[in-house]
Length: 363
Image (tube, rainbow, N blue to C red; front, side):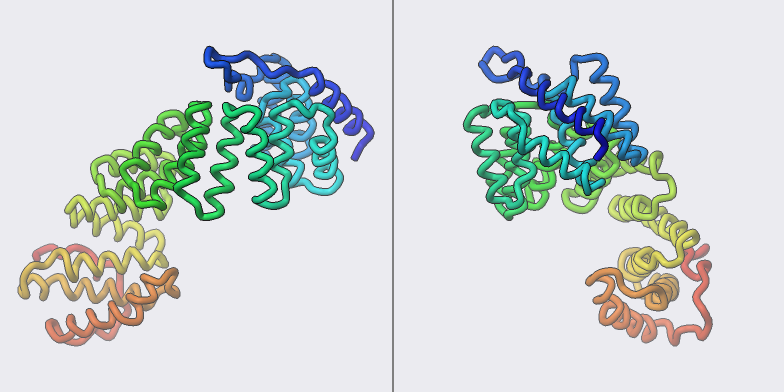
């Protein structure tokens, strides 16, 4: 570690000694904005530069800017977390300097420093004890509630974690990740309608979180289902990820669930045209032609050859990606292929073409 970095860390320790607990709300709790907004213009500018450097993975630049941020804005929690995370990623002397800074800080009364120490704890048990001690002194510190919820969730105690996420949200409604993570836990508990509310509220504040948007679409499409809402959100997803195969698979599934069957098949065909190894699309085409579209033996004679072609595409494709595909490959699809042969005759002795899967022109 350079001598300048040592001097800078010493300045940080000195600055943190002088920090106060910040303004309080009418109920006596510390205003959570103290922990989320950097009021110092130079510190805020350094924070913006640090975030840009982190996005570009310019770790050395980020570390220098982050140390400047926490010197000028010692209560800005996200800056401390970023400093810890970047230093850990870099490792070596920079990581050790970060650990030493928090463990040796003379400012024992700082809630933020105590919280950062808790994040350095080596076990969930030690971390939970440290978080509990913080909350005993400052029950309104939302970040400690959030971290307690995460520890508790990792331990498999989802119901208790929900209460801790709720405490984080109550004490700081702008701590948006608490709402997203609570939505995830609610899904795990089978409380889908409540989860949908949390996802909706979270995305209203964080609309650029593509991962959360995808999770919300999946919840609406496969778990509730609320197909019209899912389709509206799929429009937004496709605008951001126009060629993403999984998003296009969700679009096709939405058409299927909306009973727009030809549109569903066309969507799956479009995926296979660009990504022939996406065999789940072929399997789904086969299921539509085999089980959903035809309603009589006359219609089965029209659609089942297409189902068989789609099933053959699936069987000849890549290895199964999950248990469902494994079951279909070993049992489900071979059984259906036998039934198809009994009705329409033997399978053609040639390779399957994409045209064989298209909707018939005269059903």
